[in-house]
Length: 277
Image (cartoon, rainbow, N blue to C red):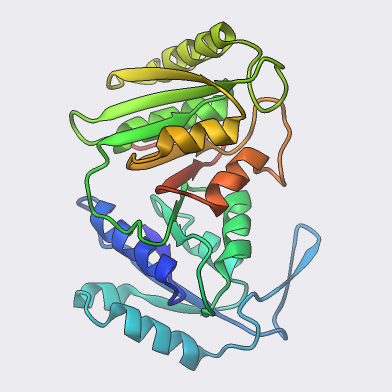
């Protein structure tokens, strides 16, 4: 795992969550990014300013030292401090990682402003992105996982990914919203939504045996339905693109809302991503 740390309470929660869920592999790798307005990066035709605006390497070193003071030496030894655009650096650093982990909407000034950074990582990360709310740095097993499905191949990939993260004996719930209109935020009827869920589960199972999956169909806007379904649960998982092709630079408006205002650990699985079993 790669964890973006800027000294904010939310980024510290992200690190604690990563430490509790990195599995039996190597420890999470902490990355702190600093930069200034003189650093210009052009990506996809857009010039990006460093969100750290004027902070220095000394600031970043101070942040890391404070955050990692009580952590094992191996975590300190593998930590990195990079200069440039925070989103670009984090996405690049995580390209071979299992997961990129960020805190959500930090309070106060940090070395990087993670709200735009989260948006950038959500659009460009090739690995799943986990966004952890302040106070969400628990190491509790992932016993209750919710997956939002919309019928797309991407949501099927998200379901497979979620199944691999579930603790033994845990509860996996596939959720769909319907609102009677059949527009881009939901399905036209409860029956249509349930049929879609069953089809997604069948497709996901074709890639290998899955644990038992409960189906939940609820009337309402998709964002509200998913938020309420995830309340009190350990993890919410969704795919990156919607079935109708509407997106916010490849991130659906529903997903954007869930990532920026999560009430539990929320993971966005990129298109065509396949988990290692």
